[in-house]
Image (tube, rainbow, N blue to C red; front, side, top):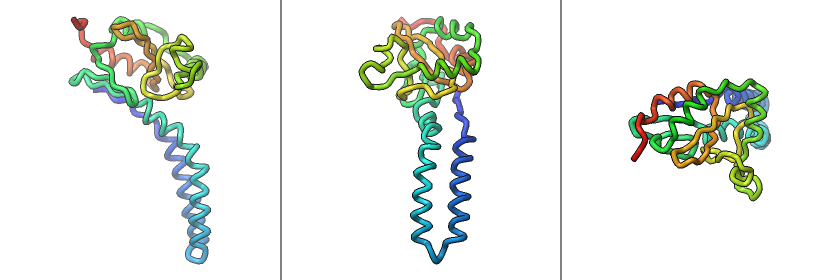
Length: 177
């Protein structure tokens, strides 16, 4: 079984700073200004929420899990049968050189699949983004594989080589009848 863990450093730093500020403010304000402390603490959430929105989005839409016992590849909210994935496309992706930092940022910025006319992957002639997100998070590596039916799929991953190796090992050896 393969499970890709997403980095939590940014979220922990943001929440830590928020808690430190709220506690310091609470030490200075409570018990005289408890109401004001609650209002200011709540207003700090308006800064915290956008700061952790991207990591939360990555955890919902781009978390990857491969379960060979059940024959399932889970990406975000989607589940794909391993038997439906074309092993040749996975091996071809394994053979490609790993993109550099700039190439990863460019590719992730161009990987869009928003539910808006003109911004859907099929309207752009691009592979469908798996997971349920509207785009690939900046800096993540985008892997393109295909199904046995010929549909091209984009999967955003933090560790391209580990994901592709685990997927290649989990795929059934023989094609489905």
